[in-house]
Image (cartoon, rainbow over all chains, first blue to last red; front, top):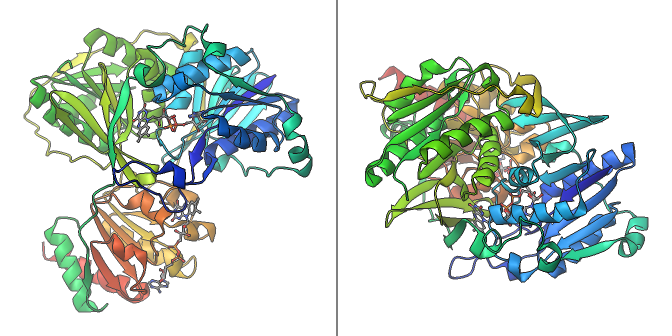
Length: 266
Length: 329
Ligand SMILES: Cc1cc2nc3c(=O)[nH]c(=O)nc-3n(C[C@H](O)[C@H](O)[C@H](O)COP(=O)(O)OP(=O)(O)OC[C@H]3O[C@@H](n4cnc5c(N)ncnc54)[C@H](O)[C@@H]3O)c2cc1C
Ligand SMILES: Cc1cc2nc3c(=O)[nH]c(=O)nc-3n(C[C@H](O)[C@H](O)[C@H](O)COP(=O)(O)OP(=O)(O)OC[C@H]3O[C@@H](n4cnc5c(N)ncnc54)[C@H](O)[C@@H]3O)c2cc1C
């Protein structure tokens, strides 16, 4: 049994987001982290590994420096890492990204008892689309927004978070699951793990490695193969400076209630 | 771009979700500019009656897929039904809600149709007859305009971000029954149980008004006051992460980067400082009111109206003043 986890390196948006004068993101000035939801997916895979002895493989598409992130994830106990990297892949939207990641997962191989995991959403692109799109390309059933995963033989019972509650879903392997933060608390790297991570299998898949997969076609990958393009990005218009109301007494509240009522807000 | 604009309606327990009407109102505007028709797809079990509402909000044709198989949202079943309809009728634009189920469906379908999909859009417009979709990225710190290379241009729409038109019960529209092919054996997920949250509470994502509390409440009982205020206003209750982490209120109330993104007409932040991660979840609200005793609190930087003061003094007066407003109507 194998669990393949897709992890993305993202800029750290918890601090200040640096923006270039032209409105694009100044990535160079921001630290990178592993996408938070993806660490929950890795943790879920490692938990299943402890229960079943499964092999855990992480896959990331990105530029070569992502090796550092992948090694750190291996230091948490992941067996094998694959970096998908190539100029041909640059500029991919979620459709093209999922084509490429699906081809890489095909190369690793999905067998009957295997599971593919993703984070729900990456904190940079913020689309939550890549998981379902990979599932479609691999022909696997999908369960998104997993907050709990129980495995019994070839059946997974998954608690799927909804806006106002949850649904419990049963699905058979092989399948794809997208993970949210409520699923677990990711473990840290272990000392032994850090010691061993550089001796664990690490591979780079480039265009040539994947080009024989029918999903890899210049018309379906990279900037050219993407059905959407970013036309421009810009900082959101600032709201006009607000009105500070004098005092915190009845007169103030009366005035505010009056203004909100006049705008049909209350 | 083909000129028909379609909307995939979200329906829960026999009730059409607010975002569906927002999408229909927007679709109507786009279709008028494109001289096209608005199509709406309604999936579920026992939902046929709801089709009229879609017409009132602007649909010219409502495709009703009413079948026991579609009672609960299941990816395989919903994708299949929508795929067949879209392939048959070829709309130029297809809007879906950016809800849990809407996003699950949209990604899967876009991949199958080999279509472009813009996520979580907050504004749509046409330029030279082509759709441009505006969406927040990096937790709302940046906006991006997305364009499409082919039809259908697919978008998920963030609830509460587009204007809802007034319904017109006299509008005419065609209601088309769509036969759903029984393929139970091809549906690979089984729904075992659905648990809805405590009844009576208004959900954050659907709320027009949200009253949120933060660490400034001081302790868990502060939410009694927040709840009372919210109840009066018909509002949902939100919270900062500090309040959630303190155990004063469950996580599903958390607003922000690692909680829910909301965009109500009115957001009232009480005892919340306005950290970047909190703002990421609420700063697209139409009008923001902040009550905080620290006049330097960053929340005042995004607030339309600010009151510097102790929330325990201000909120009770606000409740009374609100009651006066209601009484005077
Ligand atoms: C400003 C801007 C706006 C964009 N808007 C859109 C848009 O509206 N539509 C669109 O199709 N594309 C869009 N893109 C492109 C999109 O962000 C990229 O394709 C991105 O690589 C994947 O999308 P995401 O970050 O949204 O991932 P999500 O779909 O949010 O990620 C979900 C999960 O998929 C996995 N995953 C995602 N990317 C990778 C990766 N590179 N390697 C390994 N695993 C991964 C992870 O497990 C992750 O948690 C936009 C890009 C930018 C810069
Ligand atoms: C990766 C990451 C993700 C995060 N995600 C989120 C998120 O999703 N949502 C979120 O909210 N936060 C999030 N945070 C936390 C965020 O940074 C702040 O710590 C948090 O929002 C602070 O909550 P607060 O405003 O309630 O508390 P504080 O910052 O402590 O503010 C309390 C405020 O109450 C005021 N106050 C005190 N007493 C009174 C009174 N009697 N009357 C009126 N005002 C009073 C004070 O002046 C102060 O401004 C995240 C942080 C990180 C690092």
